[in-house]
Length: 502
Image (tube, rainbow, N blue to C red; front, side, top):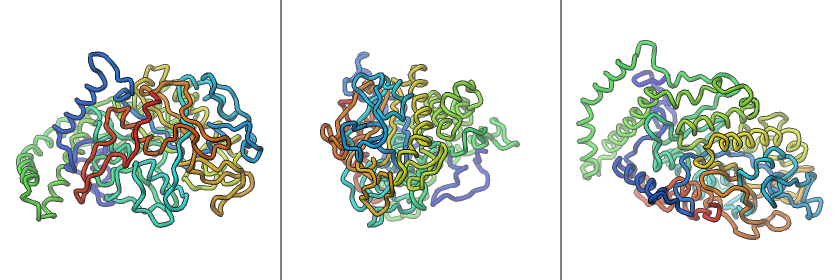
């Protein structure tokens, strides 16, 4: 249940998970409510000027679904086949044509091939990594748009902290807040997992708990538990409103404290400043939680049992499949940003079945052919087909991406961890799928070299991907905010939107 004044527990250094329903709201770290409303109005104006749409795609999207394939599939075997390359490069799969003229994909994606006129591929993304070529550093870069300066010298992930830079979903929840009664940032299927660390690059970090994702990691094949959205048995909406009225009596004191904070009176009193900031953060989350309890739309989106059985079967009766169906229902209900994370840990040993890892250091081809791709192909094609059929694709940006690609040469180690028939980590060049949100469908942007090892034309940095997401939502990716040490930070460290996609 949603606990307004109930028992507390702690998650890191924030309020309890049930007390602080982290779905949007405001923070004292930079923007006031007028600032947020002004930026939102500017984005709305940019999206429509006398009915005209900007040709570079700015502001065309209203929602984002990020399908994060943690563990990273082989780009050569899925998205960028190399039929003319030597056998030790091209691998076992043959390319097949798609409904997009000139676009080929691997034979393990026949259902996506039939939807290729609704999505595009980028085949020239790559980065020269700092430190070792590990999952953790690459994940952090992809999720936050910043270099992982807080990681170990080996590139391994460290525990999540409030000093971390915010994830892309958290940034969007702040700079493009959802409407009242709607969710701002939802994380489904699984947390981001690397080694022993959970939630790498996925939370709001220094932006505060207000912008953490609302998480639903229950297996959606089974009925979801929605007690988070329900009131205690002895609390009615009228009683809850009475509590809200009671809280109003302390608002004047809080507002006065905030004004003194902004005027500098608390400049040398860190304790009082922290208390005021915590109160303001709690208020924002409290108000958002109340609006969700009062609104039925966001809660109803989680009721997958309302979907017809053929639709559920089309997505696939798997954790990943039903999570993607839930993502469609959430954006249909006005959620701003949904992240669906592949259920296996990024560096797990691949296992049979629908939920195993993409980290194919060995046995790449039987793993993809028999286990990973049939489930991914069914679900991803269903998501694109369904969004298009419902008229949602034009306003929903969909990105499916891993943290890097896999080595062109089969069984050739770039580290000491590759076995027979395997492909190692390869951040220098890989591919991703992008659809909707104003992106022109059926195109291939960029080209890799003949071995799929390096970008050949139109190179793209992972930060360009995040800049493109912000751009599509009407957020300037060069926008700055200040961190806890009052240093200016850009939403994306560097990079530009890929305007050639629009």
